[in-house]
Length: 126
Image 1 (cartoon, one colour):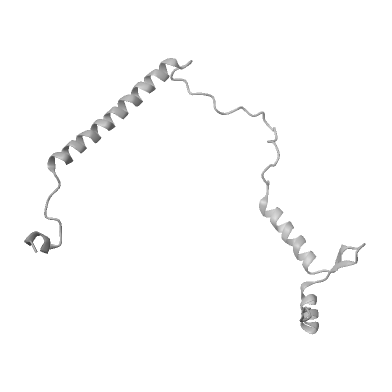
Image 2: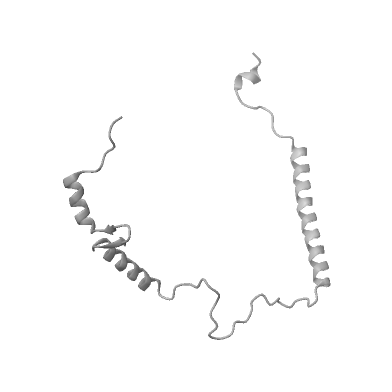
């Protein structure tokens, strides 16, 4: 075995000339990109109808004009409180879901008591 192979690591350095040439090429590419961008900016500024004027990007809205639907909620907290109250009322009271087909709702506590007494329905074994 040769002495260089026994060390277990690379013994040669990077070529200085290759590193310098790569750095100069990269720097030149950056400068070229900047010059192209500057030229394109100058051309587009010359071709613009009103150079230097900021474009009007926002449309003026009349006072008291309502935006198109769907609109944001004006008071989301109050809406959420009302929704939760309606849900709690439905979950804790008796009522009809569909009177024609005989489907009704019962409070959750009562439903749990019935399930505890009768158990859940099970399919017959085949």
